[in-house]
Image (cartoon, rainbow, N blue to C red):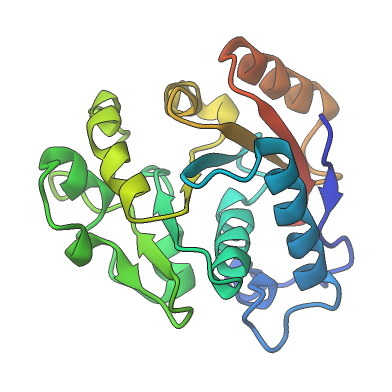
Length: 227
């Protein structure tokens, strides 16, 4: 599990909402060193995947003790600030976070795109203060949060996402919460595993690692980040 990158280990204990706001690299109160760590992480990912455009990266936590949404959001922000056309997609329909992090409505989003693969991406890929970054939120399926029951349909819409972006970053549900990550990894160039030191047990991290290896998608490494 190379590319292990500790993002920050010294945040004060606050509410989850406060921590989320402070950890975004665009926040004035972002802890020192966090932005540089994400720059390094993105550089390492590029070295691992090569120079071609259209990379699809899945970001997934081991379990609910770690925060994949923050890691995915910050990677996307750094890539967007560098001028790369970047899309970040919230595929964690059980506990969607990107809408709150970016101050967006949850719908329309991925659920609507899976229901209608010809839906206009300009409506779904919401703009952000970073011009090169668009966000596809989780959406709402049937008026309720649901698992990606139509996840197989992602193979039909992913080419459209890749056509409008140099990078597609998919925030997935936790690895140990079900099979969603394994199914998402079928369409990915690599998976980034998110671990919260002191909270994510070694046994669980090892089990998640083993499950990802079975999916035969390159494991890009692990990010250590507090929640």
